Image (cartoon, rainbow, N blue to C red; front, side, top):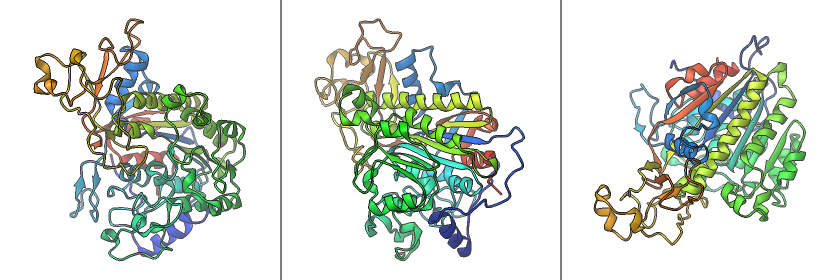
Length: 500
């Protein structure tokens, strides 16, 4: 795909983007608005299943709909694959002499690739690999008069949502307060930056003050404080719950929300996994809205008021907990999160079909943990009594261990046969996670050897595999086949007509 990069390189241009898009709400369109849509896209809904590889999709389809079923995302007409590699610090872009690829990305560099159209190093948000600030598609859309929204089941300051609304050298610079150890990176900048520099300003501070997204739903209330709540209200946001009092919003608050600008965070950290809410319906966490509920409400709020000059909206939606539970090798919860994400896709697709002018893109940032569907009755030596070390273990959502009925020990009935090799005799190994599917007899239970879906993991971390992409609407044909994650910036920016 032909690249249409939008990178600011001069110091004057960088200063302008910091002043104009990072700390103050845009005063108006960056360029003349298009004269009508002429049948072209007016809205873009970009849905991201964090850590969702092709096998996650296949396993969720078989788990919930059977071998002949389909997830909603699989019904989208344009389908392809996305390469996800990042680059090393101080690297140039692909094709440049100083280009240094890193074959396994993290969520931050991947999100920067589609949000800003540049390759960057793992942990960077809204800056290129040399530390230069790059504008995001959401900032450009906001400047051009579009309504904007950002929804996630993670902390809203986490990598994927933050990549559209902030610019930091290190993804750990989330807030609520500045920390030199979390925010500075002299390996990139050479010298320590002043705290007034946007690149070392906590993500929460940026989100609360730059007005990039009109509608913000997710987790991460603990990243915001009273000053942030005041800043949001001064910009006209209706704040659900309270950052000042650290009272999370609820599903009831979401349903009642109205207005042009709404900020609602439903947990102090990441939102609660769907399976835990299903198993504990009376728990306070069960009052958190689901991803499809937040998606529907975001679309309702964004669609209810047109942007400047009659423009539509740009909405990003992340199913973040697919990644969190895959890091923990927790197949049961990961599959429920894929299902919830797909239900959000279905809501977006339903709106797009009725609207007739909406581009829907569904993809992932990377694959997590190397999920495998293995033969029923077989055993993999790759699994051990504890999952492999997790490089993201500092994230409290990722440092749990998987649980199996009866403990993490092998099941002899599932660990015999020549196909299993010497690992089958090792008591430290445990059998794969097994799940019934709609094709199984009614008496088959999850966790039994009779269940037909057998899953295992390769590791506890990200892999370098290409990820699937599905699309619907005008412009979706550009995603048929193989593309790079930076190409997604071009597709979105082209559909919204904000690239120049």
